Image (cartoon, rainbow, N blue to C red; front, side, top):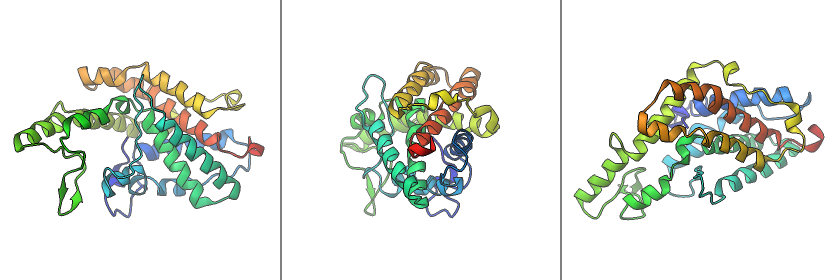
Length: 270
């Protein structure tokens, strides 16, 4: 999902302007503080957003493509468990940081945890892109220019083969072109709506004996059952998809972030 200028290298505004991740984080934190007991400690939204954009997971894709990138994909029917393991690791570290009132560490873990949850529930991230890249790249390494790897450039055994691979990836109907177009549509919808419309109602009863793994997969199933990305690939962006983004997708992502953060609060604060 987009984090706007956060993707610009060396931007002083990285992570501060409101992209999709930033807006959802803002709404989720406000929701969290309404649900948490009075006086609950949690890092400020300013500190959380500091670790978005160029300082977030997306930043690694530009700084060191292909090296230790967190993979936020969850393929229906082929879940290898990597994403939920990553989310649970952030939960563990966030719990520890909150107990120690370590603002910097807590903000980092909260931001990266929310980013993983958001991407994991984004329909465009339910398509097997890793397999696609494996099929299109004749060499596992990224193309390098002046010794630096170039993200998203498909290699080939010949110029013609490389041109074909890049067309299938970046052409009008290409795999990554569709991915970006879908996320751009969701980003426009998110930016145009007031926070109130995207804020889910969470019953306090849901917070008792909260199990993050169970709740995350419930949200995943709810989103996956909409089949939004498949419909988008065949029909393009439609009013139905826009309406479902506002009514279901974005509120469900906010709900998942809120519950994920709540699950990391110290037991005495629940």
